[in-house]
Length: 513
Image (cartoon, rainbow, N blue to C red; front, side, top):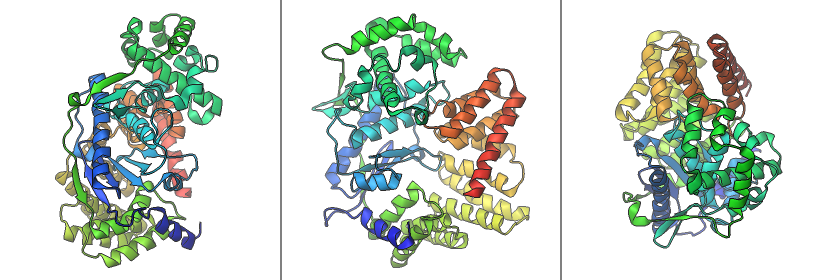
């Protein structure tokens, strides 16, 4: 896309439908939501997201140890078309990006949201947040692909109905797959490791539908009570998929039982009274005029840019930032946009202005550190004192917010950028970042490498499983699976070599992009 065309889209894609609408920030225990909808609707939307999180914890008896830095940021954009442009696909109506610097989701303000009969924007967000919840909560456990998606689909249609949160309703947009009794038998579902990018459309529908059905059945059918926990425990103990599936008995009988189960007139859905789902009040803030003006840039930068799109986004950021030189949040968005297009000196200057205005802004500290690191790498700086000064930005950010995993990861990778071995302290910080952000695949693989080098094979396996059992993990999932296979064959040396090769291949791809 040419720069002027990109600029026109950037200006138009997020224009608020109602002229008088204001951008607001809604902050809750697990979410930060940005929207130019009314304050009342945004508060209700965010409160219901909190109730959704609480529902999953209530049903699965999961304690809440989430820190403020681990909140998911949700951007509510104008409509499904705006989401599709951000995603780069006309088939996407909402999506989620997990990463150590802060997981984000993008959903439309308007569009289809008709409940369980449609894959609505809310269902998409809840499906993806269920992944986030699962990997954060059970990140060290073996989570087979079917359960990863079955759990997400089980929770996706959850919604408030009257004074209850209803969970367990069938996702009728998966009706074909749920009722397909032939394409995905239980033996294949339980003992295979399907990746969505390798399946046909029909196989994908059957996989998702039957994964939902099996999750629902094992969650609610009294005759099968406790089997899901036993199955997952068997996998976690090191048993193969076939050995673990033996807890269900004859898998052909399980197929028949499932087929009878789905043919019931009504499938069980649970209504949890809202007064049992205690949530803290949502805090609402109206964005400053500068924040509102730069929001389209912020959304696009947060989504991620490439060499073709980054310059146009940076041009738009400079234009807004020039009008709001005294708004720290505007300046840090400019710092990110300049960094993304390779103007590292300008990025550092913008981040410095932000810190002058707000000395405790950790995001500005991070961009000062990253920009200075990029400058040092560009200029082939070898002075160790210069690199130590750069690392101080990450230690300063960590001191302000010790629960944020991003500075810990950045501190570790700074040593790698310098071309020297990270210290034990840096390695320990990276491992802590992984525990706080298990959903970041790159950090997980790095943690696995550290564990392998320390001969901590049990922890290496846990880190690798996070990636290997991610159905959307792509090449990273394939690499993690290969390393796990070598570990299972007691070939720790081969596993280390394979993981090193995976890192080298990824670096080569990055260098060419």
